[in-house]
Amino acid sequence: GQSLEQPSEVTAVEGAIVQINCTYQTSGFYGLSWYQQHDGGAPTFLSYNALDGLEETGRFSSFLSRSDSYGYLLLQELQMKDSASYFCAVRGGETNTGFQKLVFGTGTRLLVSP
Amino acid sequence: NAGVTQTPKFRVLKTGQSMTLLCAQDMNHEYMYWYRQDPGMGLRLIHYSVGEGTTAKGEVPDGYNVSRLKKQNFLLGLESAAPSQTSVYFCASSYPDRAYEQYFGPGTRLTVT
Image 1 (tube, rainbow over the protein chains, first blue to last red):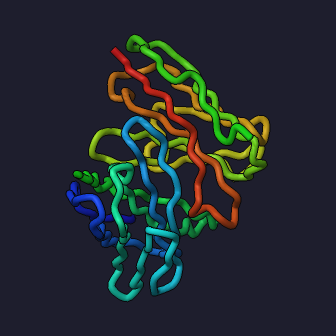
Image 2: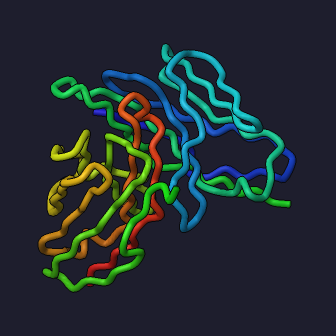
């Protein structure tokens, strides 16, 4: 099976930097995705790490350490519009079919204040 | 491009009633998925499809059925709704080699009384 842990809530102020951690336990690990979801909205894809290291996309970066079963999402120059829930998701394999499903964490609610 | 669309957006059912949720995508994606999202539980996979005419069970398939008669459409059926199926339902789609990058529809908020 697969399980993920991430903090339930993080608070920060505009302009700050925040890091959202994700630890996971899984078999057949292929990679770690991050999604953003605003209240009442749909999840939207942010980033994906298949290999160890840092991936940067504008103000957002994502890091993966496969040996530690750990990753994080780093948000820089926080803006009010970044207030949302952030989900990590492990991509794992089903050995009998080869289908690689995503298993989502329970989400971290980020509150950005002025 | 509309991306992924879902109908209806909201629905209230009485226990025992049936309904079908429709998902459509115009991105020519092979893979399609149905998730449910409950407070504090993230997204859980109900059923998925890797191509037209094929479907498979996800983590929480009980009480649901699906069909993928056309590549662009993925239907989720509830034959006999129960209060435990009150949830927000999301459809998603992806390319097979980019299953880590899923495109989600706006969701259907279902209440079963």
